[in-house]
Image (cartoon, rainbow, N blue to C red; front, side):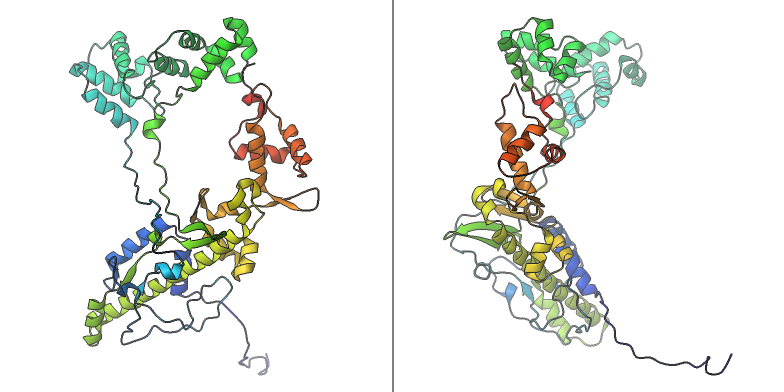
Length: 484
């Protein structure tokens, strides 16, 4: 090997790379949090960082001018990409973060506030609900032990999943007979909710029918529950065969079916169902002087500030461990406050573009929804599509037509006959309207829906109609047929 081959050299090359700083990572992470998740994040930070505190309501210093400590946070020289928030600019530091009603464009004299204070109570399990009723029932200790074993065998829908032999094997009580178990089960079947403790669907519905007053329709409805064959025909909606076997005419069968529809086939679900998710809309949309406007929901904007007491202690301190501790937390608090501001500014910017693009929806409803994809918003606000995806995930907008996740306003497009486009959301709304108007005895098939949409200039394949119908939780036409 020659000496020339072993020579080392230095080459200078110019290149670009993106450096994700911890502060930028924090800003991106905050961007995708919902209001409730952000609230939890703030609670945890308030516990760890003494330099950050909540600004009391009505104080003026929450948004006051920055009072910088002895050192400034180091400026980063990293190249910024399209997905990066403006964390490295020359914007002034702020000790507090609070948008006033004037800054947000919201009329401070407006008394029409939204009620966002409701909270759901902790749900009670079906087992706890039944055991509580058991304690209020005058039964012997022996019968209570049998009842407890039965309750343990009732699933979340309210059905008894164990046989008599299973209950006998689970009991420590000696000489318990099947008749005793049956008697105690009848007691439990009188508990709330109606229908609990049934061993099958027919018994569940029959238990509920027994509590109703009247005779004709109740008697006919109970008759439909007497055999598995009748229940099978009900599930298949084979009303012609039902009428032949039961000898009920159209009116009698129709009244019996209407009564059965009022009953609950899963009575336990009313007790054990998960609580509704509590949603705080980040954006409120209102129409003012004929123009739709989106503004931040001020009830969802955190009001934080730097704790000046600890900041002053740091300014008087020396190069001590305490001073270093306070300085680190001061810098962390400032970055967090700026990340919050960037999050909400970005959210508001994106929301205003969405509202501008979907004015027709706000005026006329889902059928007027325009096709919209992430790229459309990203191009208009000069951000990356991944940023728009983060902003619109788990963020909600309150409109006069209801509360919607921001992602609801995005929809793919379907070509129309005249060369235009129609959003998938609008097509789903049209499908729902067609089905709502269909004759009960002659449901509209997916092929027929495709034909009706084609008459309106919208070309949609039958399989696409089926996909949209299933997304709306609407059964096929064969299962929507009513009695004739």
